[in-house]
Length: 137
Image (cartoon, rainbow, N blue to C red; front, side, top):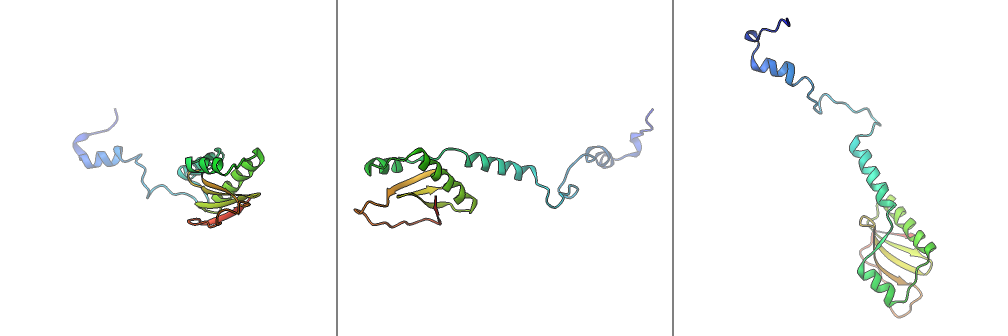
């Protein structure tokens, strides 16, 4: 047989010998420097996927585009999205993105255009608040 005699082992010894054998703790798992964890790889993949999502326009931004008769070409929209990606890479959360004569405030983490205006419109002041960075795209 197995030479296992339960009369000589305590419950703690059995637990220590059999139950904790494969237990993984932070103490016995070492990550080599430069090696990425699953969590960090997953975070990067999610961030990359979010970067490639098309920009959304808030109701307010859509209303501003309509009110101000602003039309965006496909090329301008691509540059706006590229500006959003660049802002995200620099850690900007609320960005002013300038595309030709158009100005957009973009909430980068939510991938959403918050408002839009035409820089050539002389009827209103050009004041931008609550931004932490700007991109010329």
